Image (cartoon, rainbow, N blue to C red; front, side, top):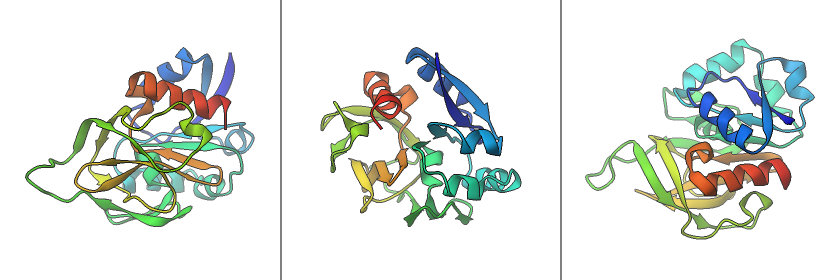
Length: 198
């Protein structure tokens, strides 16, 4: 069973990510060790929780520059995706600054409760091996109160109270705002694409 490195960012979704990757024939290395991370073939940065808390953890572990300087493929999931950007309005947090855009709070409206929670469909904006076999209208599972508006690095978005970046890429940095590990066959396909096609 081939291994994939998951950075232990303290998120609550580690077990579900572990099971999803094991179903795809991968064993996970859950680590905060800098050398392991630097030498990994591919990595996942998960995250469920608070941006400031998670960035403090990454800073305390001296992992911020390690992550920023990675040249191998890395996939951020949910908060892990948001941390790839410059800044988050959640707790006034400076993030990794890999992608030049900010994370903002979903607008409070009667028709769109916060958090955005449940299944929503994807609109594909740009071709990518990560989205091989994924179609317009395919559904994924979202849980979040902050978001990245559709921008230059958006591969796919969804519609809620705005156009929300659902899948992003800059160079070797990829991200999913939704939870692929909870998104049934579509999520499994995206994870498999990351493992095999990137």
